[in-house]
Image (cartoon, rainbow, N blue to C red; front, side):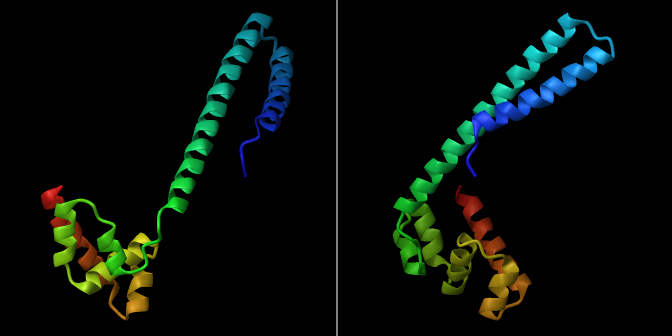
Length: 139
């Protein structure tokens, strides 16, 4: 759900009124209450700006993902790579490792991949580990 500034502002004002009422009952002077109000308002605005930026960035990422063609096969994965070193490393990897990599990119866990490919979870993890180790040598 999108960030609703007006609703958040109303909730903040209600919370602040209750807090200020309690402070007055405790005998806190009006100057201190006003400084707290100003500080809390600044913090509220910082949070609002953060929420707005986060939402904008999320929408931008989603739009970029929609524009990218889906990578469905190992061949598609290799075709999408623009870096020569990365391409060479992946081209030399065996097909099973590339299929595991593709499934990881799709969001599957090692356990799920192991179950679907009838492998041990450790074998899946080791293949990813070895590929990552090769990649770290070059990058």
